[in-house]
Length: 314
Image 1: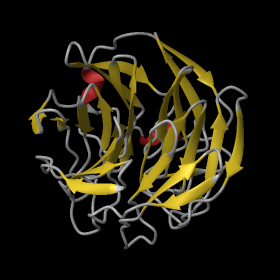
Image 2: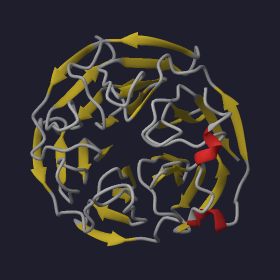
Image 3: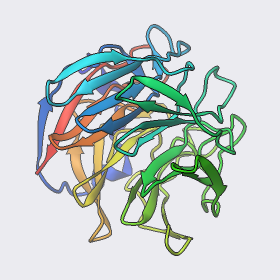
């Protein structure tokens, strides 16, 4: 737990702090993640979500292949088969049958192009066709039989590469590059669009508040209303008819703020604050609310979180 001391590094000067708070939040406490870690991937399949890989205690150089499963109904954590590789900064998504883990880093100087899928029924991993572009800290999202990989970094520069993976055919193809190259971004899919939020260029001192979406039908990119703050290393999800973004990093500071983009109104709103600041954790949209798990409250510190909070937006 890190609630007592993390606030000393919360950036209260985020631009988003000036937004009027909209809506009411109800918070619940979930069972803590069994390990302290951040920079992992997560995905939901049925009533279970999975925490995959990441950087773990005791140092920021300790990378794991561990996978933990949380059962939303029983409210219990359990271990499942490890990922085949040690991995951090992966792209992770699901099609509600399998969990897909694509890209990421192993050692701190090498990005992966590898792709795997995990079968919850058999507790086994299967190797898939490699992603054309080696990268980590990318956006990854699933929609209608396709997985969309966008942005990220190849350990030299931020990327604008945008690629589509056909789940049935096990094949990749290139799509039009994203207009703004960036890494440590987040992407979600809904209503035949791929939404890409925030991120940074070069390093976390050069964050962007860029918000773009790709029309799968028209095959074009367009810019949307920018994020309320220039943030990277945050997590986001679709909940109801909105996109929610949580926390993140900005320079040496971490954020505890929550932003909501209402798809119908095409506007950003502030939804208050998390119980504590964090970046590089997981956000999982489920029937019982939005689960916020793990992360790091302080930039480049070894004091990782295993916290598990549940937001029920009203």
